[in-house]
Image (tube, rainbow, N blue to C red):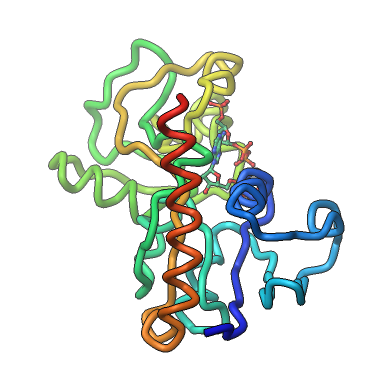
Length: 214
Ligand SMILES: Nc1ncnc2c1ncn2[C@@H]1O[C@H](COP(=O)(O)OP(=O)(O)OP(=O)(O)O)[C@@H](O)[C@H]1O
Ligand SMILES: O=P(O)(O)OC[C@H]1O[C@H](OP(=O)(O)OP(=O)(O)O)[C@H](O)[C@@H]1O
C-alpha cells in the first residue's frame, strides 16, 4: 500500500498552487520544498519523491515511467500528446489559448505566419479551420512576433490579458480553456493503484471544496 510515489512537479508558476493543493490535502511538504534549487526532493514522511521539471517536460517523465505522477497544464498535454492518463482536473493555473495579433488586420494572404510555443496545437487548430498557415516556433515572448513583423498572428496563453494590452495586441479567437491536470503513467496506475487512488481521492476532495466555495 505504501509504495513510494515519484511525482514530477512543474517549476514555475504552477508550482506554488500545486504545492498548496498537496498541503491542503494533508500531505506534509517541508519548507525547503518552496525555495530549494534541488531538482529531486525526497519527502520521507510521505514516501514521496518529487522531481522538479520544466512544465513542458512533465508528461515526458511520466510517459517514460521515471515519474509515476505529474502535474501539467492542459496546454502542455495537448501539445505533447504523451501516452499518459489524465486523472484529475486540479482547477489551478487557469488560462486559455488564443489567437491574437495587431488590431484591424485581416488574415487573407496565402499561408499567413503564426508564432507560437505550441506548434502542434496551432497547426491542428488552423487545419480544422481550413486555413493553410506557416507555423514559426518560438520559446517565449511570443507577443513580440507580430509587433516586429515576424508573423501575422500568435497562438499563446492568455490569463489576465495584460501582456496583450501592454503590447498593443488584440485577441481574435479563443481556442481552448486551460487548467492544470494530475497525470499518471499507465503502468504505475495499475501497480500502485491503492496509493494513487488514495492520493486522487484526497486531492479531489480539496478541489471540490475549493470549487464550492468560489
Ligand atoms: N499567464 C498565465 N497565467 C496562468 N497560467 C499560466 C500562464 N501562463 C502559463 N500558464 C500555465 O502554467 C503552465 C506553466 O507556465 P510557466 O510560465 O511556468 O511555464 P513555461 O512558460 O513553460 O516556463 P518556462 O518559462 O520555464 O519555459 C503553462 O503550461 C500553463 O498551463
Ligand atoms: O494574460 P497575461 O496574464 O498577461 O499572461 C499571458 C502571458 O503569460 C505567459 O507568458 P510568460 O510569463 O510565461 O512568459 P514567456 O513569454 O516567457 O512565455 C504567456 O505566454 C503570455 O505571454
